Amino acid sequence: MEIVNVAVLPEVTSAGVIIKAIIILAIISAIAGFGTYLERKVLAFMQRRLGPMHVGPYGLLQIAADGIKLFTKEDIVPQNANKLIFKIAPTITAATAFIALAAVPVFPDFTIPEWIPLLGGVFVPSIAADINIGILFILGMMAAGLYGPLLAGMAQANKWGIIGSARTAIQFLSYEVVTGLSILAPIMLVGSLSLVDFNNYQSGGFGSWMMWQQPVAFILFLIAGFAETNRTPFDLLEHEAEIVSGYATEYSGMRWGMFFIGEYANMITVSVLAAVVFMGGYNDLGFVAGWLIVVLKIAFVFFLMLWVRASWPHIRPDQLMWLCWKVLMPIAVINVVITGFVMMV
Amino acid sequence: MYEQIAFYLFSVLTIGLFLVTVLSKNILYSMTSLAAGMVMISGFFFILGADFLGVVQLIVYVGAVMALYAFAMMFFDASRDVKEKNANGAWVFLLGGMIALMLVIVFSAPIYSENIQAIYPSIPGATNPQSVGLVLFTKYLIPFEVAAVMLLVAMIAGIILAGKKMDQSLTTEDDSVATEVISQEDEK
Image (cartoon, rainbow over all chains, first blue to last red; front, side):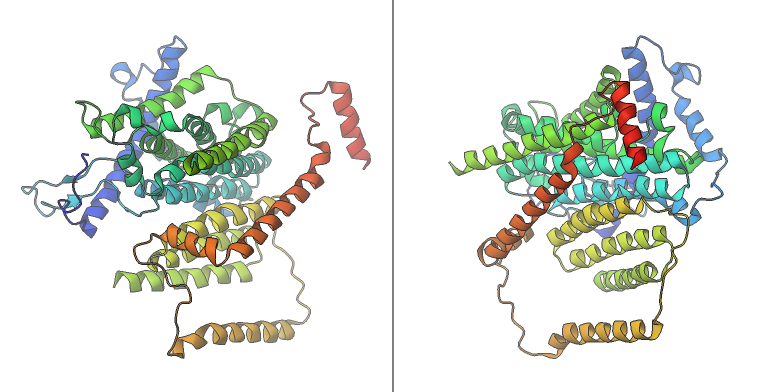
């Protein structure tokens, strides 16, 4: 994904955008499935276990087995639940997660070779919808993703569900503030909301990465990103020991699977944001090509999430709120103010 | 052509969803359709090329305002229908209809006027957030500041109202204190 002159770039056609959308849907869903396998393996190695080993070589076909199970499981809708909302809720989570990915550069640009019938020569852009307010759009879409768990919990006529959805609302609303404020300081430095501009701002090699200029914002963004994607130190939404499975208590089969895919897609979105905004984006690093380096960065942030899950226990709800409002939010505000002063002087 | 299709799609969906909000007796249906309608409204901003306002609509109305509504709704039983008291149906119909008619006239009158001019035309070349910022921090600076102070006052008032027991945590105290607090609250 080298930086090409705008004039050289082929025209983005609607066919290209549709192909891109299908690619994102197919590949990210597949990665979500593969991510569970990776997560179980990584956790297992960190805890000196073997993880899934029985299905297929080295447990690789475990994904297929899990997928078959998810698709063929009986679909249960509880008797007193609000049936329509109960059925809509999982699609909201999955849909918002994928819509957020529309504004994210996921794979490099490429042109379909001419010899392929029907679609030959179509240019597929790296960003499906290249709007110049990319970051805000992603944050807004992730904010709208709150409705999946929220409506799921309220529709299922289950006490655990409603406690889970209350926790979701509190956690997402609180940590959205930290995400927004932490990413505000880099936005002030770059002076644009476009992810492409962020990438170009950090084109000066390793030393020009945003995380060296804004280390506080980077750490705050990672912490808040963990909370917004429901990762382990903050996985209170569906913590089994306390509230059965939170908002997903009554869900089974593919409806539960959609929550799951949405969650993994959000993890990927946060990883991409961290890689593009703070870790140098898809610029070439030395002799390593840009598209490879960005995949490695995204994979590293993804791995970091698993690493943290293996390292830390989860925290209590009151500690979660304390951390957000008494620690992270003030630090984020101070960071923004200091950035402003430094920029003015 | 895409714009027209999108416009009619969004308008039909918005009106339909807001109709559900008003007419439904179920809290969950009303809330869901209101939130979805807000999303559809942000679609209009995107069609008009005001990406920034569209996203702000998403973040503020869908992400924050509606989420707070939803949070309040958790204190109700969402599975039961709300019994509405409509004593004077005719009056409600008449007043509501007249207000709606008045709004339509007020907002559609400028369509037939020839000399509409933007008082603060957007500067050519400025991006969306830049032009919003320019107007907001020059012409409308004082309303902006007043709104900021009002929000600050509201925030401090909220903290004071909720803050009396803020440092009290049942999990950090030993059991005797916890049971005492619970029994006190039971007496209330």
